[in-house]
Length: 110
Image 1 (cartoon, one colour):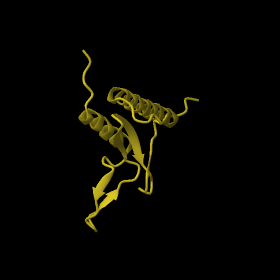
Image 2 (image 1 turned 60 degrees about the vertical axis):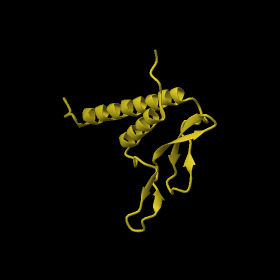
Image 3 (image 1 turned 90 degrees about the horizontal axis):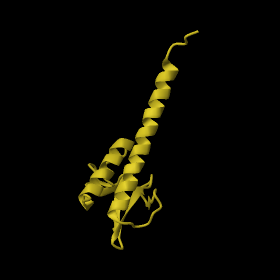
Image 4 (image 1 turned 135 degrees about the vertical axis):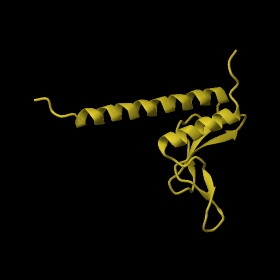
């Protein structure tokens, strides 16, 4: 039997994606200066509508958001799988970049 994908699991996966990419973990935060809510640039967040879910990302200025996966609102299980694939791709590129950087730092054997 497959594990149920809950809103909590989706939000946890998105929090990890934000941490992995160095983005703020929440799309909104209270300003220390004004005490008002402010958008957090580039933070990924969960959108819910029409009985489905979508991954959104806050714009740099905080004046709007984009939908990086371009899926519209889909079932929770599908979105969870797509975010997992996104994380795997980011990790693969980080590992590859790290390996290339290490290889370039090796002394020349000639």
